Image (cartoon, rainbow, N blue to C red):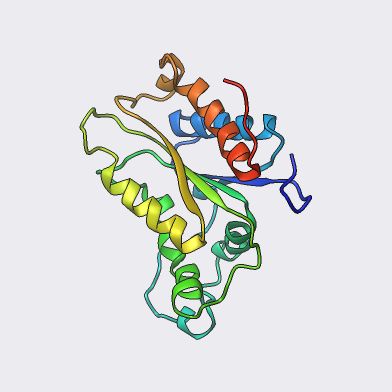
Length: 205
């Protein structure tokens, strides 16, 4: 599926769980499968396999919008600014994102500086949207509240609209998500909805 400019929609999934092939990654894979079925090109980034340091608050980015830390985050910056859709997936750790996912978010201070201080516009002028996918072990009403605020700020820094979410409570043991009656199906649907929202088309069901 192409955007109004004729190029294929690009959706990037960010897997923020330190545990491979668990509940979070299964959900993310279904979202990406749904996006691919809707015609998008997809890419999955496994944060735990990258070398991404925490933000050191040295404010080098205030000079030109570029982070001075030379690590794998430098590979992510162009992906974050070029993707049409972003899917951030992280389980809940103490009412927040994992440290792996949070490192990515914090390092996007450079993108925030570009947009809100230096006024450097993203060269990609198409509508860009993001969704948040998460699981948590408890059933508390505010389980996802802190993480959602963080993700919304992250998307704002990247110039992405917070456009949807899939938040599943009472999921903990590895692989438990497969027993949920609707989660995987909902994840697949979310991926398709994300792509259709980027192209202005509507699907069935």
